[in-house]
Image (cartoon, rainbow, N blue to C red):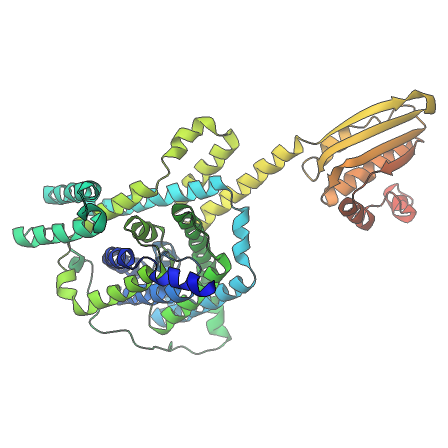
Length: 497
């Protein structure tokens, strides 16, 4: 069964994987160069990183078909380190990032994705779609009309080519777009920006490169804060992207294996003179939309990338940026969840608020981790508030025995503790109070404290209190932290000491 699964991952979609990997490789080149420039590095650092990370994650990652490489989110985090300490320290930070990510995999950090609600994922996707589109705007401002015409023509090819009989379904339309526009630009000798204008492409294969820095505590103090930030953002973006690709392909992925794979990839990237990277939602969507599904697509994307920039650099330099802008606009449009706009009217206000807040924070700060953190916290607060509304207390009076019976129903925790306490009438003249907890659950110290308060107040008023129906979990936490049956603790609370 395992052998069949591995065979399917590698050889289940050969033609689709090969063709999609060509599109991805071509689209990776200008992005890798651009991210290198953002970080203040030579273009080859980003290109070598994209090669190493794509190849290693293809072999070790937990999500087949997902593209990992140098990314803008990671590049932004390393700007200060590069400026103050240089490339060698970045290589150490990249390797340390990998080590931290491998540890995260063994600590099962992938499970934390279960705490990320669907509204946060939707907000993350929409924010990335907006950022991808915004990243194309510099290529579309202060340019000649030729650029607009080429971009529009590229979008036309991308969206109309698939309707051609047979061939439209055989060759990915983004690849056709790049080839046609490159040929047209060269034939017409158009004076427009090309990949060659982005920066010098490397002319040699990467070599093993151990960082030339002293391996001591001082170096660790310099790189550790950056490595932690890179590891967190890298894993967050990778796990979120894996979740999105799971949805697009209707398949499951191993999130903890993905953490380890990303770690190994970053260690290899650092040893080959590359920067840290992670999964790329834009390139992953290009891969899926172009027909890529298996590990072969990721492996070949990295290999083709390296072969192209080293051996076909004269041809690659001729690719007009307008062609790649058209591909990325297609990615932006395809990534954005248009249904989420329609759902704003149908979904609860809390769900829509979480989604919009995630979008706003990510787009405003360009910090994916911050946006997702805000979304998760808001979702948790809304959930806690909603859950507290389902806690209520009913009561009945047994006049013959001068007994008031309270039935507590629902979840008692920090947000419903005050509501729980307020539900009892402490001034009622009864001899016995029975608190029925069969349909209640106590979750935290706040809820236990609220129960203590209720019991002690009734006893102060001279009533005998009896608790019945406690489930085992609630009984355990009350026995451990409750004080209403511990005379010495009650004495302290009532001012006896």
